Structure formats: structure tokens, C-alpha cells
Image (tube, rainbow, N blue to C red; front, top):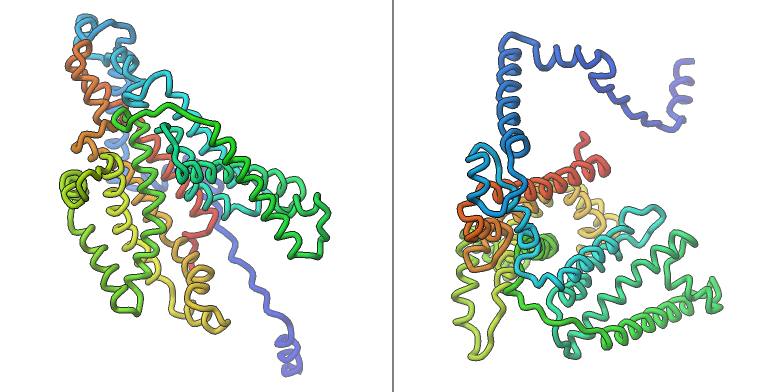
Amino acid sequence: MPDEARLAAADQPLVFRPKPERPPPTSSIGVLGWMRANLFSSVSNALLTLLGAYIAIVFFTAIINWALVDAVWEASNRRECLDRVGRAGACWPGVIAWIPNLLYGLYPKDQVWRINIAFLILVAWALPLWLPRVRSKVGIGLSAVLLYPFLASYFFHGGAKDLLWTALIALGMAAFAWVWLTTLSERTTGLPFGAVVARLTGAPEDDEAATRTRARIAYAVLYLVAVGVTTQWSLSEVSTRYWGGLFLTLVISGFGITFSLPAGVMLALGRRSQMPFISLCSTAFIELFRSVPLITILFMFNTMLPLFLPVGVEVNRLVRAIVAVCLFAAAYMAEIVRGGLQAIPRGQYEAASAVGLGFWQSTALVIMPQALRIMIPTIVGNFIGLFKDTTLVSIIGLFDLLSMARAVGEDTTWLGLFLEPFFFITMIYFVFCFLMSQYSLNLERKLGAGQRR
């Protein structure tokens, strides 16, 4: 009888039941109990808690009194601020008067709308990534990374357009139209834009060749329309020497963040390659750019690069800074990605090979998704560091957010006003870095990156 019961139990399918999660402390013992257990569990912990609370209260009280309670909000110059409160309170009129320059640099005031429109286009471009029932999110994300810069750069710079530049701008415009046509079609019908066009033009549902052909024709028509619009559309040129403030900081860090991740992935794969030449070149690039500080690379690209160019060929100073930041960030990202790849068990590679996947298929479908999930905190931390490191471009004459804050105190009207502008841009940096950090935490929870294996 026991043998029959054992055989019957063996025939039953195995059911894996997840271990129930432990409720948070506040749900079982209450807030007071949680505080007693974590903050006042011993005499030493209670003393440290009280000391920390005292320091926090004193610090934030002083900040609030200086920035809000004792601050001056209306004044015509720095001398008037000092006559009212001396140095006990902040002088905000100077910062308020310089806010347009802190945000946009020396960009012409009547053309600032171009920066705002380009930013709204980016928000609209990325919005479908958070909408439900949108299945082409990978294509939408890639189009934003690869094609949005062409459209945004013309908004920022403007000027005359040659044939190649017109084609690239039209490509960005057509991609933006495709993003929202695909979003609307997938949310309403569940089909991508090309398939909807094929159905509307009478293509049979079971004829995949006809569907693909008509979808390509629809995409070609969309691109030709974008080319026609781009040809008739023109904006006045704004030289990059007028770019500055938060706008310039976001441009440089945006290019660096966008370029660093795919370049870092390729460099990490190249360093782990079995081909000696590729591995040697990748290793040399990574070690070279990781062995020198960013300020040295910026100086080298700004002063030495023109010496190696042909006579008459000149590269824009902003372009040189962006290239330097991108290469520097790619080298650090490569080591982050390599660490994530080494954390993947060998069995994952063997399992991908066992089901018939080649190197690129196993890397893209099996290995890299797991590695990137593990590397989320480190990648976002590197992005935050890169966003703050863009302040170094001020040493080569670019008026980023830090340079514009310093310029406030050099204005004759607000001479000596340095603390308030620096406090203001500190809050800006904090907000951007905090948002990136919170997005990283939410992404970790969504993907389960922190769960035990």
C-alpha cells in the first residue's frame, strides 16, 4: 500500500508555490512598534537617533530661514539686497532675473520656443513607451534614440539644409509620425500601422507578402510627405556659441547617455571576444579612456584635435566636447556591461547553444536581457555621474549650467551674488538625479532585479 501511494504521488505534476511574502513591519506591529524596534532598540541607537534628528532639524531650519523666511524677493541690484537683510537671507531677484539665461544660455529670446517644442516632441515620442496595448515599444524606443537627434538638432541649430541634411531631418519627422500612427492603430485595432493600411487597401489577411508590400509603400509615402514638408520648412540659424545653461547640459549629457550604452555593450562584447585583434583593440580603447580624467580628454579634443585635421577643416567646439564625453562614457559603460556579462552563469550560455541559437541570437535574446537587468543600478549610477560631469565643459569655454550660475555673480548689477545661483542649480541637479534614481528603483521592482535567485 505505501508503494502504491508513492507511485500515485509520483504521477502527480509538480506544483511550485511561491513563498508568501512577509508583510512590512508597519502592518504587524504599527508605526510606534517599528520605531521602537529600529530607532530606539537600545540606548546607543536612541542617542544616535536623537543626535541625527537634532542635526537634521538645525540644518533644515537654517536653510529654510535663509532661503525663504529672511530672503529678499524684490530688489533692483545686489546693494539693495544687502541694505535690507545683509547676509542673513538670500537675494533671489538676481536669480529670477537670470532664469532665462540659466535655462537657455544666450539663446535668442525670440527663438526659445524652438527648444521648448523640441523638448515636447521628445516627451510625446517617449509617451507611448508607458501606454498599455502598445506592442512596438522596442521600435519606438530605437527610433527615439537613433532618429530624434536629427529632428531636434535642426530645431536647435536651424540654418540652410543640403540634400543629406534634408533627408535626415525628414527621416526624423517621418519616424515621429510613424510612432503615433502605430500607437493609435495598436491601441484601437491591436495591429501595427502597416498592417492597418494593408487591411484598408484590401490586402487579404492571410497574404503576408501583400501585407508587407503595402506596408512598405505606406512607409515610403509617409517619408515622401515628410521630405516635402522639410523642403518647405526653414528656421533661422542659431550658432552653438549661444547655447548654454540647462539646455546645453541636457544636450551634452543626452548624447553621452544615448551613445554610451550601445557603445559600451559592443566594447564589452569585443573585449570578451575570442578574436585577438578585436579583443586587443577593445581593451586598448577601454583602458586608454579609463586611465585619464575627463578634463584631460576635453582639453585634448579641444586643443589637439584641430592639429590633426586637414587645413581648412574645422570641427565645432560643441561637437568636440560631445565626442569626448561620449567616448569617455562608453569606456566606463563597457566595464559595467562586462561585469554584468560575467555574472551570468555558464549554464545560460550552454542552454542557449543547446536550443540552436547562434552567438548573436543567444546574446540578444538570452544573455544580454539578464545582464542588463542585473546592471540597472550601476548603469543608472553611471548616467547620474555623467550628467554631473558635464560641468567640466566649462573649462573649454562652453557656458553650461554651472558657467551661467557663475556669470550671475559677475554681472555688474548683481556683483558678488554667487551663493544663491549655486543653490538654485544645486536644486536643479538634485531634481534630475533624484528622478533618474527613482526611475531606476521602479524599473528594478518591475523587472524583479533584486529578487533572490
